[in-house]
Amino acid sequence: MDETFWTYFFVLGTFAVYIGIALWARANSTDDFYVAGHDVHPVINGMATAADWMSAASFLSMAGLLAFLGYGGSVYLMGWTGGYVLLALLLAPFLREFGKFTVPDFVGDRYYSSFARIVAVICALFVSFTYIAGQMKGVGVAFSGFLGVDFNVGILIGMGIVFVYATFGGMKGVTYTQVAQYVVLIFAYTVPAIFLSLIITGNPVPQLGFISNATGTDVPMIQKLNQVVTDLGFAEYTSTNKSMLDIFAITGALMFGTAGLPHVIIRFFTVSSAKNARVSAGWALVFIALLYTTAPAVGAFARLNFIDTVNDATYIADQEDYAARSAEIAAAGGKPVPTWYKEWEKTGLLGFDDKNSDGIMQYRGPNAPDGIANELTPNNDIFVLANPQIANLPGWVIGLVVAGGLAAALSTAAGLLMVISSAVSHDLCRRTLFKNMTDKTELRVARGAAAAAVIASGLLGIFSAQLGFVAQVVAFAFGLAAASLFPIIFLGIFWKRMNKEGAIASMLFGLITTFSYIYYFKFIDLDPAHWFLGVSPEGIGFVFMWISALIGIAVSLVTAPPPQDIQDLVEDIRVPGTRTPHGIADAGMAPMPAE
Image (tube, rainbow, N blue to C red; front, top):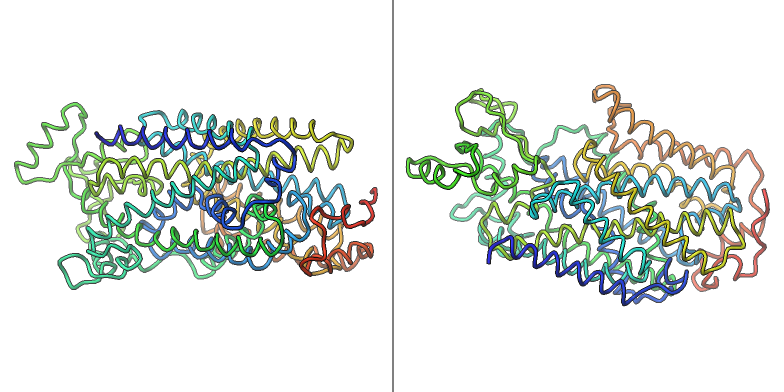
């Protein structure tokens, strides 16, 4: 049984499990649809949170970034890991104590303003749609690479699967589906990493293999990798061409953006109490650490294997004649282009430009000592998926990795669709425009909004191919969240003087400036020399976050303070056990005043 059989076996098998879980956990009420009834066990929620958190960017793109950016790619590892710790310890328990369904729900009631709620809905939609574009791009990469379908067709297939379990199961179905997806993705990530670590270092633990000696030598694997890449004219693997300020800004944008991501925050509304929110956050960190501590090793192994199998190989253009030509080249003592390269070349995600017309694939850096220009352009997003093929691992490992990549992308896509759906049906429709809407009608609107969001996200995934690799697209979402949502959530919890005027000004400034900066430098001015303070579009959200917070504070100080009941609310949510499970109205507080 070859890798094609195993790919279809694992992909179709896991899809059947996801759909079965969604039908079993079908949502029958708005409480089920939005927050899974508030009764998910902390360990289950921790596993679902980990799957929600570890998106296509974590599974597919992060190791690829580390493989080709080396130390410079570690900003994604540091930012995403540190950001989750920040969210878990600083915000999640207090938001759960507040007891609402969504982030805009918190904003609307904490800032006693329908307009603030609408602005928060807009921010959540911008963040979620930007984020989901990266997930759908990851789905397209996985399908196009292994199932022999076009990139865009792969996205359409992924849309269909997410449509079923997001629209029928709601958050209840998504939660239990994400548990299954976590199991799939973590096995799919760690099993090939163990194989690769054994082959390259002889150590079965990837985290230790990363710092072990290369097999058959007394040279540390990282030192060997440094020597290999510098001999080809690249910078040392342990160096970076990013400025210290840009590294700091990108890390900060990812960290604080994490703490403002609606699809991660909403997961802590599914448990029964603030205490359980803390417990589930702890479990989520354990589950996330399994992948994040493995990623640096996977990236380093990928870079070594890529260079070893492709550099200075003889290119074979005719696919039909590949086997015969490959045998001839090998018999003559040459190195034929590997099979895995020819398979991935069909996707358009690998490129070879024979600049010196010698038929040899030269992979070189800008400082190549032999003066040969680089002829290979690999896409960072393919290397976790391609790793098992590059290392000639068994077919079942290859099929498992494909299923894992799809699980990572689809789990996060489903969480984001729940944010989009709830923002439209609950915050915009029921809480703002149609306040007399019944639960039954709201549930129908929520499902309709989820269906529409699936279609829109698929189109964005197709469009996102122009933006960059998966992790880069996702990084833009973190910058938007850091600048627009984090300041007003943080200040809303820890500063009772923060009022609706300050919140609205802060959100609008953060969203408009960050989105404009990203758009300008990704589509209009592509020259990094023009970046503000040398900060890239991926990191600018961190800079604007501080300005956004200062604007919110300044506007709040020169306008009227919040009503006393709102100030009392801020005091209450910081004391666990003093709030009833469903927010302001249940606590006997006055309804939100009309504007």
